[in-house]
Structure formats: C-alpha cells, structure tokens
Length: 64
Picture (cartoon, rainbow, N blue to C red):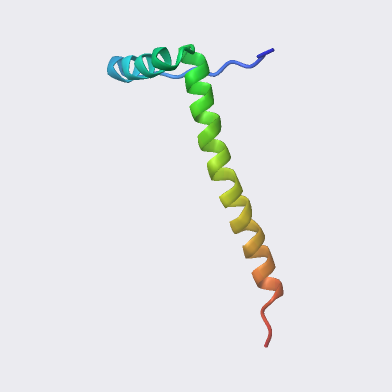
C-alpha cells in the first residue's frame, strides 16, 4: 500500500505526453511517473555507489 505523497507541477503539454504514454501501456499517470522515476533512480544509484567505493578504495591503494 502506498503511504507517501509526491507532488509536482508540469506544463500541460508534459502532462499530455505522460498521459498518452501511460494510456498506451494501460497504466495510470501515477504508476507511469513513479515507475519512470524509480527506473531512473535505480540506474543512477549503483553508479554513485561504485564511484564512492572507488574513491574510498583509491586512497587505500596509493603507495609512496
């Protein structure tokens, strides 16, 4: 069950674009936006974690 609210503002042409795509695949606007946002977040976060780990590890591998 969803228990958190996310609000956003969009231009009417953006809303229509999202609505068209959502209708095409048979889901609600909310499901479409939430799915797209989660897909993007999942694509970004592993890269950030990798960079963070590499930065931490690189300081350990420097020898003088």
